[in-house]
Image 1 (cartoon, one colour):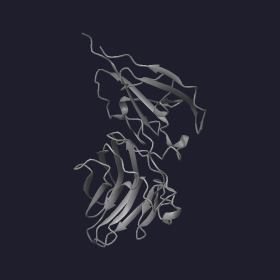
Image 2 (cartoon, helix red, strand yellow):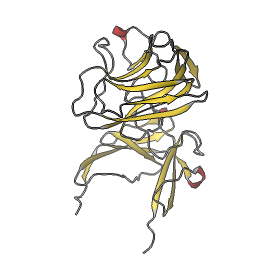
Image 3 (cartoon, helix red, strand yellow):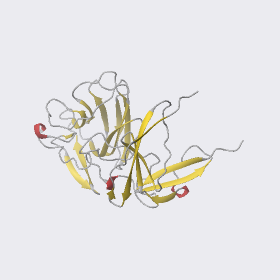
Image 4 (cartoon, one colour):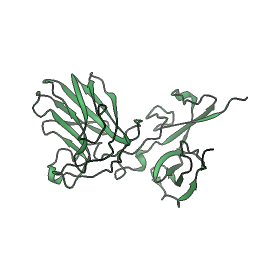
Length: 283
């Protein structure tokens, strides 16, 4: 039998694939205010973004982003950075995200510093014991990820991830936090209410071979500027240089809706009319 050919696709922000390379089209962030933490240190009652930064922390700019830094004094104020999916009662104006039961969610972020720190999915919404992780930091920025499974019943308030830094003298800096559905951490993106054309990957790379696993070797891909973005059930799932696209990982016997919009630099068209289709049942 002849070997099967597989089309491999990757995305990036640069024409050579070196900036923001990913083989998985990035999900939008479920948390707002994760780029600059603009609203993170405002008074609770007037807070709208979903990030809360302890008053003792500092916020510093770096390459278009801000990062928050905290030096622990031990147990005092150790829970210093929170990202709320469903806000606490003390922040009535804060944005709210729907959290589905029995579903995977992945929290990712870049961090550097000293000592060991704990990240916790709080409160009583993620299945134990995989509802927290400990990280030991170095002086270099590194990506960390925590995937949790939500419970069958989701609390109506105070659903969050938070950082606990309880070792006196330890230092932690955090940048580009992101919460997204599923068990794969995709590159940082803003939320649906914040995203612009400039935030999405700008280039698509493709190649074909007989290996079902996509390579991380940038030179294997032929890179072109993305001209069309594809949406499946209103969620962006990929981009293409041509008005053609392979939809993958579809469920059998399921109805989907597809839309497309056109990209031209920093401009984009409205989405097309939705086209519905149903996959066949497996035999």
